[in-house]
Image (cartoon, rainbow, N blue to C red; front, side):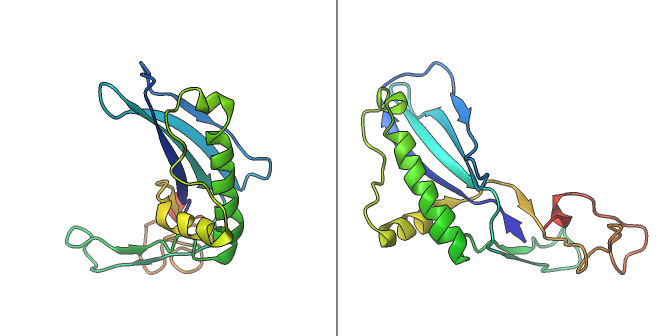
Length: 171
């Protein structure tokens, strides 16, 4: 089971946006995809959120069924975000540094009243920030992988006439 994790930095603004802003970009190696948005937090203030999706995570999670009847119990899902050192050290740390750079750019600072919540100074701080601020990007995949659950034709093993053809079978 894999999921594209998300790390974000947010800052408050006194600037009143009349609409929700959304901007996306892709880093040249496609490892993470920064995106930005604004959100109204009250009638007098907004928050600017700059987030990044780690596009090709190496960390793997687990999906365990609790019951054969899915109406009775939800499965147990453990994503193990940033458990792989490459995800944490390279993509995670690079992500935070890029988010800070974007947050401190002239394009953003002209709207903000505070600095980003985090300002990295050491590798250990970057690792902790990543672990504390990782979240879901709602792109789950790989819970029904080819070979262990479905065959090469996406037929569910041991169940006649059932196929799974969606992100659950992609790894």
